Length: 406
Ligand code: GDP
Ligand code: MN
Image (cartoon, rainbow, N blue to C red; front, top):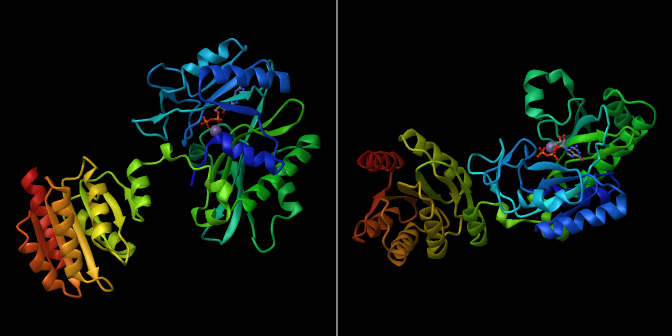
């Protein structure tokens, strides 16, 4: 699960990581009040206004409606409400959002930490993530902070270095010092960076995260090290033991169809293709997506209805797939092991009648217990549903209905 920058910074602060202080706001008036409060608390008179969306690249990104960037500087209290207003409610397009962009509902009003007149603010990159192949956590760090790290990795990979941490042993002092040393720091800045990395690692562990990425980490001219940005990826499988973190979920940032599917207990991932599919079991779902590709289509989604599929789950799955306007055909591929094929067939027919007015052709391939009976129910339903028992026939049928529409 992803969370917003302002939420991630709150977590970091709780673990003793120094951050660029800020207050979140959802109207220009609230933004002005936030700036006033920050001014009183920190003495800052310059502010950064930062769009809160679940995507990076905001600094270079643009708001469609106003042309404002997603991260802007305000050099007085007076500038804050107007500049915040140019971001709030707009659609921010960055290299990570895709062309459709993301609606901005909140901005973070933060203290400007690049002190006015600072000649050489030094930005670093620090992240901690799970290295699944090595079975270790890994700290990645670079002197090339503030830039797109993918680009650094591609063009100057030697400027990124890694320190692996055995989870059984934990982060050792020498490892944090090694990272600070490789970043070329000395004196107070070195000590600050060691503290920063140690606290960051504790935050990563304590929240059961799979990634913490701080880009940029800033060294100020008075040698403080602080997090200017924060991207956190919480492990969904651990959320049951972090109710407070689970509550940070922002459904408006997620695909509405995926949210709806989650509520029906379906495992759905939206994709960009034209053939919707509904399958029981993740492995069969992956194989079905391959079959769709082989038959000349592109999967519109991944949908695993699970082992206990019944009329309700089939109907819920149908409704979700049909809401995707790109879908030109639907392939239902169910193996009747625990669930019987005749029941699924009845579920399909029932759901079809209930939803009504389905324009896209549906191919149902049922295999396993009572497969023949299932096929008979589909064939005799009088609906525009085609049955198949052998997967190859189902694939050919998909090909045929796509060709008929081309
Ligand atoms: P991202 O573009 O989504 O990664 O958002 P960031 O939080 O990283 O901000 C983008 C850029 O804005 C940073 O790389 C900084 O160069 C700049 N920035 C962030 N905070 C400040 C600040 O306090 N003062 C100034 N002058 N620039 C800032
Ligand atoms: Mn950033």
